[in-house]
Image 1 (cartoon, protein in one colour):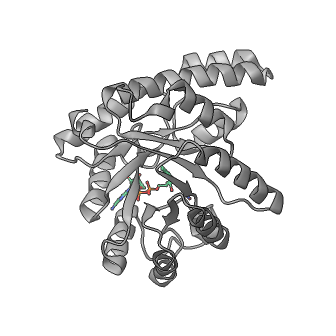
Image 2 (cartoon, protein in one colour):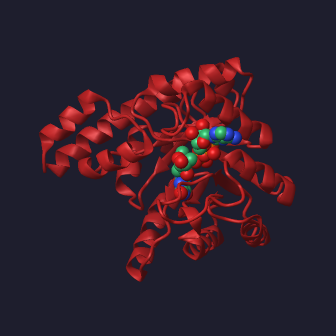
Length: 289
Ligand code: FAD
């Protein structure tokens, strides 16, 4: 973990672009609550194949104009160089300076995979088109990407994104801090020393967490799953237990040198803020983890 300790810690919150006026109003309230704790940036997801293109742009530009730097996610699957260049130009002209560059997952039956097949090709294209305009974040998978041929190939593919010009990475969420520490050790052995910020998923709803985790290849450890199962419909206890488990993991990550945290908020403020407060991040410049 030594390599990670040299980086200034940064803290961020991720949103998805709302579909309805009600969703937009709710996100504004969530944004206002989270802005009070002065995160380093917000980010906004992008539906693979461009399914949320306009809503992502609108949400990013709206949030960015309110004073907190906001990073669009941008996935290449299903897109063309031309359509991606168009987005890059919109963001550059609006003063956006950070992009989360991804391959994305095209829903089955949604057509061809596009001109850029993998995230490393997207990173290279963004550098070619926009030079150093954007700070580029890429995805990292401490428990390995579900489609990777094997763990070694996945590490090599991560290295390709760094070689192509990624500045830092955000991980898929995990509930097992050792997978993150091991991942960083492996990167250090490969002389890869960019910041790799843990992605944190607050636990608020058991069934959707299971569905999501199965899809993206994140493991819910048996003891957590069993305890959550035992709470059944008792959402208060699910939240309380989830908050405690995730807080403890974050404490450990920061104590060992993780260079910040990125919260998958699912457009809800409460759960992320509770973890934030438990960690004492309001005074983050003063505490030593
Ligand atoms: P890649 O890095 O391209 O890897 C995908 C797979 O291909 C891996 O198995 C890898 O080992 C393999 N691979 C990579 N390069 C090569 C190569 N050159 N040759 C052969 N194999 C290769 N999805 C969205 O649709 N929208 C979002 O907004 C979004 N945001 C995300 C944010 C974060 C922080 C994370 C962690 C994930 C996000 N995702 C999002 C999900 C992501 O798009 C999926 O996990 C997707 O399956 C992989 O994207 P990637 O950028 O990691 O792909």
